[in-house]
Length: 428
Image (cartoon, rainbow, N blue to C red):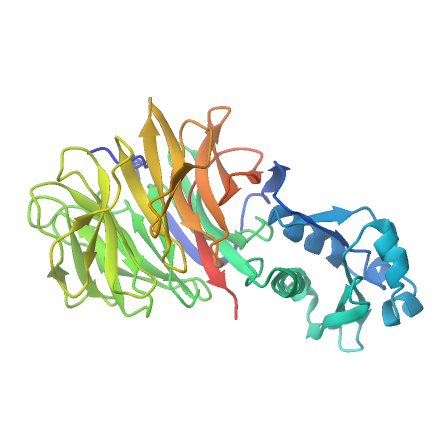
């Protein structure tokens, strides 16, 4: 069975680990498509923006538009203080806005910034949400993401996704790999690891403080656990044969991994420190790419035990595996939504590898993309968007798609292949 991931072994040695190495460049976002029932919203510049190092309204606007749920109206300049204190509901309704995101940003004597945010409903003619933040200049972008999350949650009833992080692998050349951590919009990228060897399968811990991944630096795939704050890492799986596809349980205490130490490749469970290793799946085929259900009761995985790669699930408590996918001739790379009601995976139809969504409650299946070489889907923290890797112009890029397939984005950089995305939890 050929899993559609790049696992080429690069020659040579050399490795650098760190939590604050500068990354190569920020990703660029291009939004295409139109979401259903988009809400028109006005987001003028926060008062004091001209004296601040960041235009918060620009970040908030980009976040909300990227969700596919909002259409930002063009608004020029800052609002006067009186219009922030008492917004003119009729004026904004005439402009077509159903809501208004506004606020102020002020530099404090200790070099920090005070940010005041208000969300005004033009129909209700009242402030429906407001918050204050006191942060360093380095946290202003995160604050903008938090404001976008607050507005998104108040207006849609769903939790936000913007104050979260992406991890992905950048390949600059035949023997140049980087594990990069960035904001959810690709901004503020930091290189966590540089290597002359392949890096694949990064996966966030439930608390967002750790990454696990597979490195080929030992001339075979082995699994590391990496603290993204300190840069410290430790080897947790280097058994005989291949060690691959690590995934955390929802409580962060257990990992599911694919090991070939017994001959064939099967799913094993173990503690996150690498101990208490026990075999989980039993078949004559290859079992790989495990992922836990959000309630921790099941492990979904890819297996070719039936002849072609398909997605199965098996209860952690024990029992037989159950096949989940039937409508595709080839199905790999399972990802489970945070509510556990949807399965995203890569299907192959007529030679094209595309992101596909299966509703586990109704059995409805939808192909979300029209590209040819999609890989590694992963859900946003609220389950409303998927990020995945694909190819554009012969090189790897990241992309996102809404669950109805209507709104898509491309996250591209100036050079190199970008692969293996993993969307982390909301930052606390």
